[in-house]
Length: 214
Image 1 (cartoon, rainbow, N blue to C red):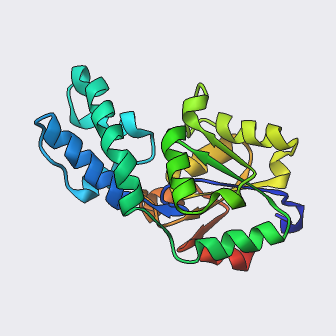
Image 2 (tube, rainbow, N blue to C red):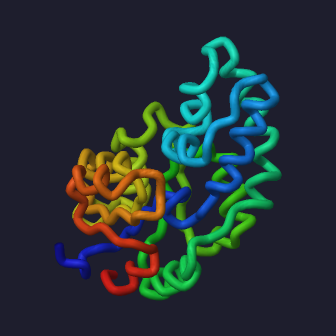
Image 3 (cartoon, rainbow, N blue to C red):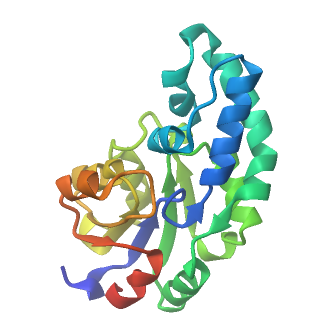
């Protein structure tokens, strides 16, 4: 791929730019305790991340408790996100560089809009992004390609002019279905083996490695 053709860079949020895992773990186990379920290990929780908060909780509780669980989780998570989330190292430097180079920058997240914006504002990311779109505003979440297609339509740009940066196998799947090149960073909840199976354009160990590529 000729990188000079790229005009739009779309980022996933959790696990890619932001380490919110401590906040997720704390809110998850608060919810389990509140509803009298067994607490789960950080590993089990992190492996369930990436499909939205309802899908995070669903495998661990009875179906009839899901609505209440989501309410308890979200009530707790508003504060937990601010207390226990941080940017991955050099994220601000990477975004500053890309912005100064004139790229359009966007976020495509399965995290609900309200909570994505809590993270974006708290961590000072708003100034970098031209557009933020979350799956709760769409019919389909990733790995469906709808979210990436909508963002490209917003800027009237083609898949050839776009690259997507994520951290999970579902990010690579969404990009492939949208016919967009993708770079997957291994700071999220998918294993390297799972990522490799999706054959992304590149696999990187940290977001700072984008500076060598773009």
